[in-house]
Length: 120
Image 1 (cartoon, rainbow, N blue to C red):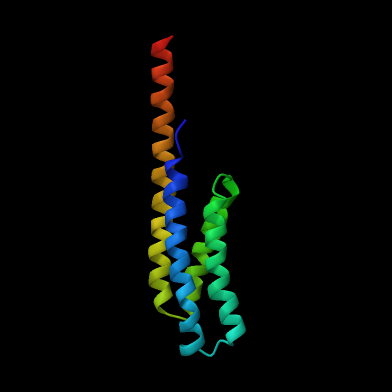
Image 2 (spheres, rainbow, N blue to C red; image 1 turned 60 degrees about the vertical axis):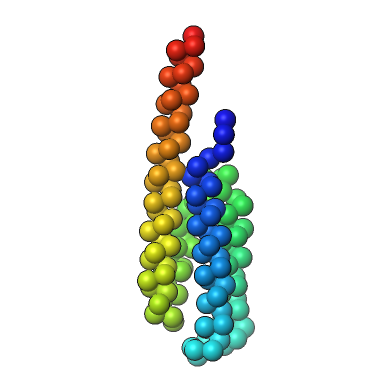
């Protein structure tokens, strides 16, 4: 069977989100009152989590963890208000990828089953 479209789309979104979250680090350091160590932990930590999750999407729990990351990205808006918008955009992209990926996978499975039944 071919690669999972849901996994591919979600991994791409997490990879792009890792870049965005990594770039929040200098913003946290220079424009907020967040201590440098905490800013590094938050910005780079979330970026690393995104990249690790992108590689772990073979497991169903990783999709749930992806939702947690989306919530964290939105919550980052409490410190950097623009993250309410960016986090919301990524959450919308994540939800769309999960939904469409599942739909494509189920339609693909039905098509394979119909083909197998036709072949006897």
